[in-house]
Length: 377
Image (cartoon, rainbow, N blue to C red):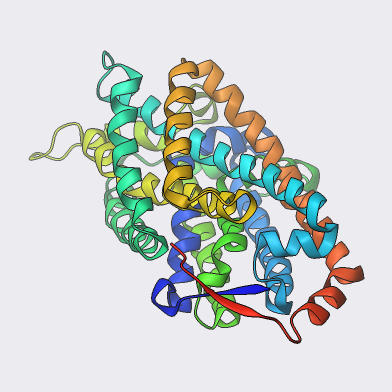
């Protein structure tokens, strides 16, 4: 028996743009520049375009499977792997999604501690953010979508000084010579950039909550396109500001760039940006945690409120245990490797399995389904 979501819990297809864009642009845009130049130098902006183009292909695969009747990740796994193996695979994906939420939270807390409150304990900042997350995610999917909307609008305002003020210190010669790296180097750099595009795959969780979901595909592609162009623009501005040698020594280049900006009525602009950046990382964390609570409800029958409390406790414990910048960077590197396997290995494999037999099962399953309305959050 399949379930349908109450219309009052659904959102219009247009909001998929904000769901995708808000979950891609987050903590990564503050420090992605240092990693992508390792292989392709200042031609790395080309690698960002290549990575973005590959994400469009993956989104097409996801929508092909979802539009064919698989509804969400959990029914898709059941169609391709059967009931029990499908549940196991879904549980593994839930761990992956939880890991994303945890690393975003821990990275933001690390930035706050490094730039604003160096003497503040990690647990105090974490607790404040977790209370906000509890309030938002407990409100349900529509509330999370509203936060994603704000998470797009507010960064759009924050980016204005980033593009206007640093040009006073720009060195155009930093970008030359262009196109001096071969395709192998560009692909290696694109591989390093992919972690910054993670988040779009959450469409596998919230697809049933979209009205006329098939019409939302163009908005998902638009979200990826705008995110890609934003990353390219920020990368080029950063390259104009810093030499390769300087960039290698900076962990958070975007924030360091803002420290150079001087406005008479505003001192320490990076303090303001970091504080307001909370509106950027909240959609990332909340949407990921909402997806995990949704999965725990589907797989284990645990209510989303109870599972949310368990997840928040696990985030608090993880933040307390993972201390220091080096362990955090190692964890981010590990997650980056896992995300590459998931996006470019697992999703294409799932797509192939769906083409082989999942689509036939899906057609047979949904010809005469028994439908009940789910009280979804």
